[in-house]
Length: 494
Ligand code: CS2
Image (cartoon, rainbow, N blue to C red; front, side, top):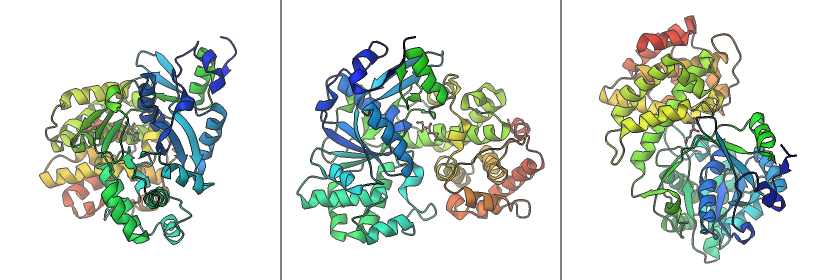
């Protein structure tokens, strides 16, 4: 292979002899979308949909300006500066084939941490018509027990006191919307792309709670003018590894400091409620529906929950990846049992969807041996994910008298995982979670108080009061604490 070429606008022609590159004039792009949270997922999903539209000669008004609101985003900022915001998307097929393609739809990136004014100005610019979000489940700042906005967050208190010094998404959105209103500009749409049921409704409720305290008049204007479509987003996007960067350089001759890898599958179902126009996404396969609720629920309770089932059990057993879990027949059967017996019954009928097909395709996607999605990615931030993905299903099944045994073992596994931070062979597990200290504190009391972990009301609500659950849970933690051979208990149940 020839010497790798640095991925950059000026080298695109040469890169184009090695892999597909944007066929459109990126400089002519207007910034129509400001996106907060430019992780791998955004780059494999929304940015890719827009790239496809641009390839068709459409959507030149809809270039993306990424925004970083965390210190950690500085790395991407530096890389994007060097690479003119270009990156490679490496689609990994189950047969080992990799399809790399250079994506050009992101045309700018700004760090809100260092300087808030350019970010507010960009959002308040007349060209900006959508502000989209992938700020993760934990980024919405709600109290999981009450579902209300968390005003105790010190960053929120700071921005309420100093509206010109925004820190969180809420401070930035209100500052920009206020400026638009004062300048007589129409509002933008706020498009949530996170794995939360009713994600648009949630974004609306949280933003209005914040704005009402900051400026009542503004809150009224937002309530009237800003649309918050709900959306269901889907594409498995593992963490980029050093090996991915090397494969790209060695096999394809392109030097990209942060390519993104993903599976071939992609889906986006959105409610068609936009304040100020939208790209013609339907031309590249986005589904517009009047009510996204059933699709979101299906995806969160089957795919995301399925991931968590494999992730936590896999972490304790010592399987490094999701596909390694699927190669293990016990894991595969257990997952299927959970999906069929606990998650499916609470979903009911979803018009136009065959749930059997959906589950079959999920298992195929999870089994993709080329993806190597790490269980550590899946287990990260479990405290923000599990209440939505899995604990909600336990509550639903308790209400209807449905089965809860498969999910209960996962909660017991999560307790052990949070307590010991190691797998059954004693290998250390790094726990990445905003609540890792609280989780550990609660879990480590299990030997003296078997229900200590469940007493965390912000995660489990009133599960502690349900005898059917606490009985099963107590049995499960006893077993795991006595002998961590998790696979044995899984086998006993299937
Ligand atoms: C995963 C998701 O974070 C997780 O636990 O389940 O990131 C999942 O891969 C995506 O939602 C797929 O669309």
